[in-house]
Structures are given as structure tokens and as C-alpha cells.
Image (cartoon, rainbow, N blue to C red; front, side):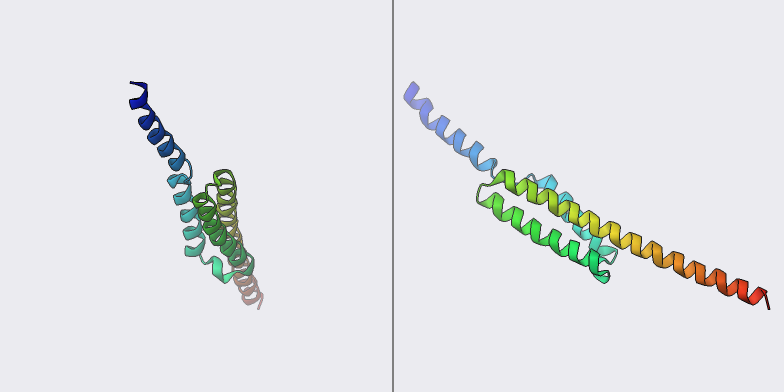
Length: 118
């Protein structure tokens, strides 16, 4: 009876070991969503944001490669960096857009004040 359990234990351990060498799909999806969101708001149009977006994409690939090689701990850390860089790209883009809107509004206010002083 003990000999019959041995193959079952080996198969179970192999399955657990293989399952552990993958990044959690939800975390990968979150990172991909952050990258997509930054891209959707135009991060490529702002140099600093574009740099962080590129780093996020590169880090996502690196994390997947590390996971494929069974380096789960490193892969998760790199995935966290990828998410952070994607979110930073999004923040930089939103800040730049908000600054541009403020400058436009100031110009319009200045133009209105100038026309009303005439």
C-alpha cells in the first residue's frame, strides 16, 4: 500500500511545484491593465511617462521570463516594479494634461481680462 501512494505523492509534489512557478494571473492582469491605461491616456506623448511605460512593459516581460525559470520571488518583485512604473506613467500623463489645461485656462482668463480692459 505504501508503494502505491508513492507515485501519487510524487505527481502531487510535481504539480504543486509547477503551479508555484507561475505569476498569479490576477497580478499579471492588473499590471497589463495599468500599462494599457497609461497608454490609453497618451503616456507616449510625454517623455518621462513614455520612459516609465517602456520600463513597465520591459519589466512585465522580465517577470514572465523569471517565472518561467522558476524564480518566483524575483518575478513577483519585478512585476510589482512594472505595476508601479505603469501607474507612475499614468500619473505623470494626467499631471501633464492637467497642467496644460490650467495653462490654457489662464491664457483664456488673461485674454478675457485684456479685452475687457479696452
